[in-house]
Image 1 (cartoon, helix red, strand yellow):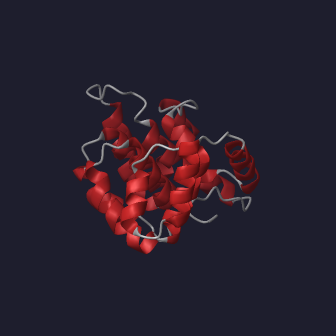
Image 2: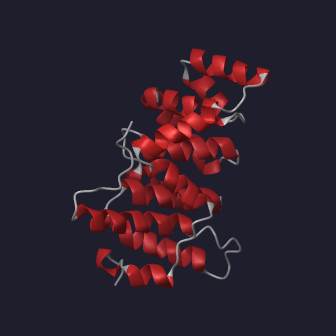
Image 3: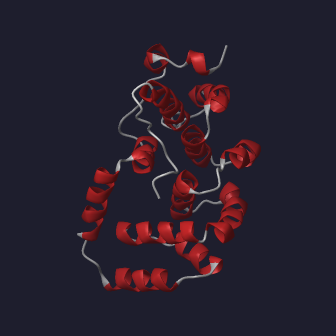
Length: 210
């Protein structure tokens, strides 16, 4: 039976996590502790700014409406500016979330997808119900895999059977990209890790540090 009790060391031996994949990087971004986050931000600040980067920075600083923020989400930019943009989106969450939910199911823009997933990781609104209701509408399997990861980060034990079904789906021979399964696997790992760490009072949480 697919339930919380099925998660164990044996499950992850049968379905191994990969440390070098997109899902692992996103998982690290969304669950890093404050010290690691500070180090990460310092590294981004040390990146030299070109004139375009300074223009992007000024535009982000001035942006206060959803249309401008949406346009910036579709633009390639350096990490420090991307981080600033994401935090500004969170400050405008009430206006931005409906737009993100409308655009994400059909988006093919990598930067917009990445920003949307990050915002789902830290939004005040828990995106779990929306993801469960709309995941089957998403044609892009990469986006689906990333949202499976968010389900594990923001959902609870009730999403375990669903994520296990997603693991089965991505492990099917018909799926060419074998790394896509890492999205739901890292989501399941987070749920299992929280359960283990709860015994020592150390929760590996997302959506609570901003």
